[in-house]
Length: 144
Image (cartoon, rainbow, N blue to C red; front, top):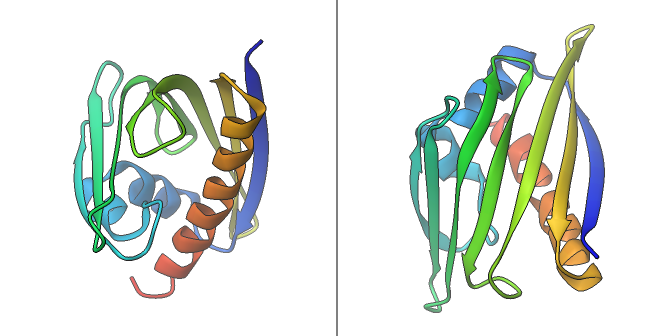
């Protein structure tokens, strides 16, 4: 049985900027990481059929690899992509990620749905990771 998660966060940042920061390598390399103390390699082609690759190496030598394909991209409303957790995570598995961005009165509501976790443990770990990533995204907006 596959498991899924849903989360939301509201940021007081324009939707166009949230979309840009989430789909361009230069920005992703600054905030999207499972740990703060690592070097990041990011390759992104944010269009339908485009591929992405994230490689993180911690100062302690731990390595995390995630890749996938954009299934649909609708700037600035969001995107849908596959995610393949290949190295450093709780096993190798794939999920489908849906990110919707809704703008209202100067803020952006981020709705994340992720489907296909093989276990509750992997889903729960991803929920914590998303919480950390969204915190990092919010902090990133204070420095750009």
